[in-house]
Length: 209
Length: 209
Image 1 (cartoon, one colour):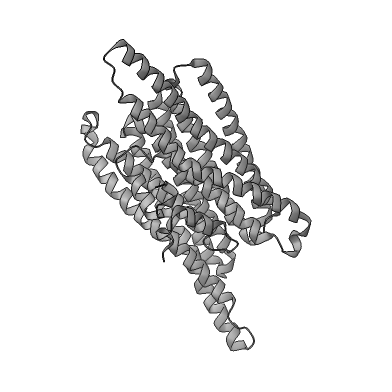
Image 2 (tube, helix red, strand yellow):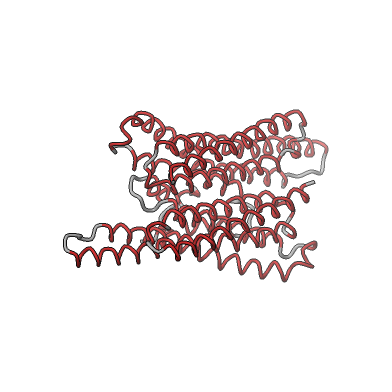
């Protein structure tokens, strides 16, 4: 059963349980999905209104992109938990003979690489959605300004939570060059995401006056 | 049916739909509940470990408090949507006669006050949980540092989203003195919450070294 098929209450219970998965990576992906869903709502509450006529085509495109990114983030809620379960499975492999040790090291490296790539994809999707949030902040229904703001905060939480989950895995990659590539990428996403959040909130504050 | 009884996927669909509820206020409460659940997980992954012995009693108390606050936030996911539905119901009341106008104004004021108080309670609970996150950052299982960080980001998103939902309702209260009381309270929560987040992240960065 996929995590997204659990009830919200059951998902919260699973998160609170004393097992490492689902954990922060899945919660970050869900934060991003919540932000993406809110942006879709705002697009839908805007399209069709007189004052939105000039932005209608752009809002339609934004709605489609937000739905696509939100769908990816839903999937990442499960993928993150599965990726981490693989790391734990690799840790449990036997390590008596030299052959076993080598196989375990290789499995652990593969699992760590996947467990690093998964939150990176969460961060990428949240970053893209923050760009859409900044657009919608300029053109979305004025009655939904606090919804756009809540969406942006959730996307920032998803982005920053995912980035922490990437960074925590970097030493386990056992490959400093690959670790540096990941670090360069997440540092960029974090910086650019913070800029997008500020732009979005500035636009919202201006329109709330 | 309560929103928390919907599947995660169905909740995301309801959020994305072109109706104002559930909206940013419910999403903010859920962000807070996710953060509260993650903190409970970290307490459970810490209690019982040798190095946690000196903090065991404190962690047990934190676990109980986090569960209580998270339970309140679950409830606020629904309460926020119900409170906003009441505002919309008041807006639809007849306003032909003077008597109707007066009754509508009174209903709108009551509904707006409730729709402002609900996200305030979300902000209060997220703020309290951010205090717990800063504690757990100092004493929680070292393998769960990125979970604590993700929790703190979610709690900050819940707090800031809820504060925006309080502020957007203040003009509708029709009572400048009451509006100022709300504003003083949320400004304090926001400022203190930001401080707690920074403290939490500093502690995590120190321990990750």
